[in-house]
Image: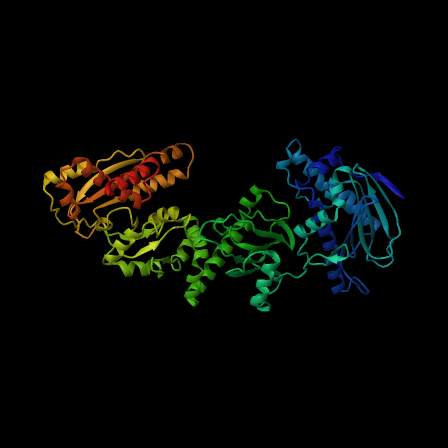
Length: 604
């Protein structure tokens, strides 16, 4: 039997490793099972080149709990180790990395410490009072050995009895970690980290993993059903995905994976089922913000890249050139796939637009390379359900929808029900009104006005229909100047929540008697302010700017202006104004109550 001290200079290395190696203590199981998988894979390789003799037998990893002894054991049938190898790898190599780790992070808090010095085995000490390793090498004539360490620099190395090749790691759990004697707890951790490891893993005599998940196969080997079944394996309770993209790159970096486009409702849904990042089928994280472009964070599925280390910090990801290349590649693959579907099956593309629109618009706002490609397949749906690309919309509205500056005016609605009267009036003039009612459309409109040439977005209720395209083609009002002045005075109302500007226009007799509009620029400013804090939130509380456009040519005013009873005349005018405000959803609280009471009174 050999006793000794692990050859390290730093005396306090073990407490630091035990406390700080990983922020999530359950990760020890991932590390130890992964080590067993590596040992198994190495044995397969050596066997294939003739260096490991004899039958390999069943290659598997077993995880076992012993509640009486308070132990958790991870066993493999891989290459195993000789006494010399145990001394080298457990007492020397790992700890040269460990010292570097301690020197680098001495005095820092837990959140800044990321273990990526190959210290996986020593994660066992985070949960253990003592760790035993019983191992027997695959080499002919090799004897089994046992190594033991209690978390101090002292160790024991001695001969042992072990009939089969491979390694057993026995963790004698400390009092704070007895949760890892619970079957449910171990099942959860294995499910999280080891679900797709490439060697069968057994717990409670049941295999818990799929060693050959879909992303490890070639696209030519997989059917539509295979892709859908794998999605079900990842997200058992979700609706089937819209479609998917199979990633398979080996130069200039290694990357495999399958990304799925899920069904998304019009309103943004908080993402529960995130993209999972793997490194050689070992789960790393589902926080993939810097690897996947931000606009694709609503996608689901798996990315596997051995070029991203198992333990990574945010700053590492942001600066790593491989990560940037992966990010750009995913963007290109997604754009190519969307363009392919649009070109080959536009009907299907349009049917999926309710879900796809969020990805596409967000991508166009945040990624100029994606914008260039997406300009071809972005579609806008009009109020009759017809879809237009940007170019098609331009062609359809070329003659009618250009303003005095020569810009193409895209008329849009955010609410087809509330803005129906305005939509109908615009359609009567031959205008095409498209729907822009999702949570990101406000930002999208502002961005595209900057990124597209000679385009202006105008909400269909932001002005009277005659002025939506800045035509200013109003006919003369039939009212005298005196009558116009009197009418303007009658319409000058005091509504607490609103700043009302009144204008008299000569419109057609069929146009409404009065129309309430919120000027595009001011409304957008308020909408943006509502999404901000501080001064923005203060600005959002300020009264709405509203224009009341009175149609001087409507026959109703001939009767009202000749009305001798002043009180009744004022109430009727007030009601006309309130009806216009009501159509814009701007009549609230006390103002709405007064309108109802006044209406009843006028009817009497």
